[in-house]
Length: 601
Image (tube, rainbow, N blue to C red):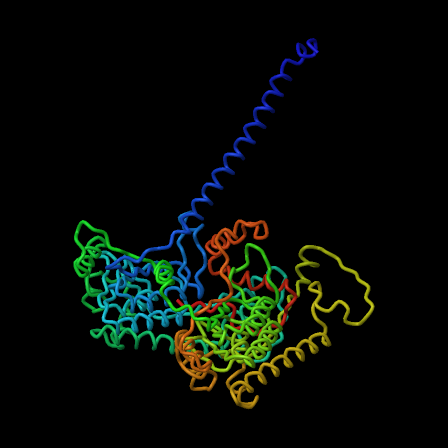
């Protein structure tokens, strides 16, 4: 042994290094485990402390991030310094509670980088307008007002802008990205089968520009939404009439100096943020040495929650938001907000059996998706409606498959700017034969037992019979869709077809066409549901259950949800088309869906 050590003196040091490295790694892993446990423990313990509502409080609504229908548990993202996205449900609830609370004296709207659809902005603005009936003031401040944020903030009693800030007021636009030429270069062609002149969801994969029909419906849609925005703002900002608002938009107001923006009447004061908070203190009688008692929407709801009615009679508000899919699919491209047909059906069946739930408000914000899942959910909504009232509240959009779901309810509410309709069906299967055979050099051979055994094979184009069969399948799906809507709206299939054909409408257009029953928000739908259930005292129960933040750390999730925000940020406008193409993997190639990504900017 000694002789070997003398011959190889490095062996002793080698094993010592291995041992020390192993011990170091184990110690490091143990230390990280302790740190993670400590962080989790701190978050859990901090989460158990109920927020306290103090006298002279101000409800602070920070409009930032991506506004979702239902508030998610974002404690982990808050810890990591990420922007926490507001949940529209909690903001609306907090505004309603603030209007009746003696301890809340005012609302402060703080502008940020907010992404939200027009109908959500309109519902939020109308809720703030209702709050003003309490006699309490609303103040708005932003370093820079994005157009949607300004639209909401314009309802405030005083709108304040940073002295070197801007107001983005430029009108609306919707841009579609076309992939046809890119796909041709790659050797991929999309085989499309559809019903509906206006069913433009397939255009990005088949055209090089918008078709005349699509331009017609999008122009009508944007004009109607913009006119609503202009009308609402002009009613609140008495100095600025609709004509002036359009002139300011044509001049692209964001390029104007702040002093000119004030002269235009769009804002009331130019102040730095510290000057604004000092003004708020004086208005509320808070001394200079004291801080403002700011409370966030979620905290206000939690603080007052114990004081609200806890009646055994419940009205369930079920949030259905996102792409309609047959089954849940994990992956970093998963949007995190999908309407999973199998899950929704189980939830609806449970609500039907819950005797404490006297009525259900189905809140829909969806562009559509799988036609099969839409039909199954329609069936379960109809079954639920046989046992208790089912009232539909349309959010940002309830189009195609989203409207298919809505047709199963008893009564439909929509915001004036809700995107709805798009009654149509399409099928889409790629033909990658040129890419696979000519460009990559793959060769295929097969045997089969029957004529159509390899139907849907992307390594070759459809033959005439296959195309005819799929087109017939799509047309049958459209006929079924028409019959569902005709039954719900008390029309003939021919009448529905005349306003269908895949065309999208705003809520106020849909009301005139008889596709919705009344213009109103979620609270209106809840009040109507209570009247139909013949109850005056009730509590609100929200579904589906919101998962706690630490579910993101579970082995089942593999930490994927934590990556969703990063993927959206990295891919930008490409995120949604990539997500839509990913859905092809589920085997659902027939869709009831609006254009994949109507981006209104």
